Length: 258
Image 1 (cartoon, rainbow, N blue to C red):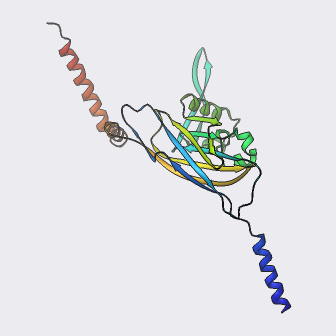
Image 2 (image 1 turned 60 degrees about the vertical axis):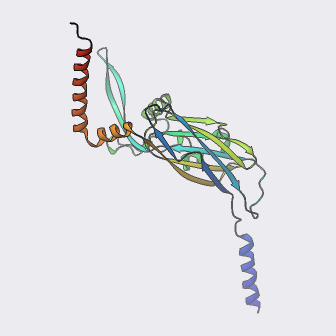
Image 3 (image 1 turned 180 degrees about the vertical axis):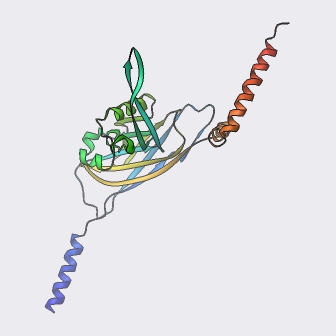
């Protein structure tokens, strides 16, 4: 009987020490597909959600923080460094980055330095400075850190094109447990599958994450020419030459002086 009572006591103690269910994220997007047509000038994707708490969730004293990141399809890019030689600027050293995001946008309820610790941000690759930048084997390194000159040049060019961007205080809370943000999609955005990740923080700790997907695709004549150029390069080139010849002939006929 004593052994049975002891086992029951241990079971009750284990149940009492089991962690309470954490917060859950309920996330929705204003659109799951962006169609690029001839008059496309950019758009915005609204991400809104709610924080669901179980009755057993431990009460927390601090406010919630939310970070929303959109990551575009991976790409391989060669960055080159120019050097002056005999008065002429020439390409010298280069570095190839492999499978890095072609687009990265991040909105947060506060600056990242106030949301969480550098270790957690780096672990979950939150923020452009914390993304992993793999390099090809020919470069003699596995990844490029945030101080790498080639990496900084790549990020700077992406920021100039509006393809890498961040906005502190870009996430707002209409209610204590309801949030929303508008993510800007520029006109020069690459096509492909995009991943939207929402991170929930409180007092610097990561409580929950949620992932969704959106698809950005060309439509109509733009999609036809895109597919033709990428899948039927020879035919695309021949058609371009024929079109150029026809355009030149037509211009000669219209502006011919009798």
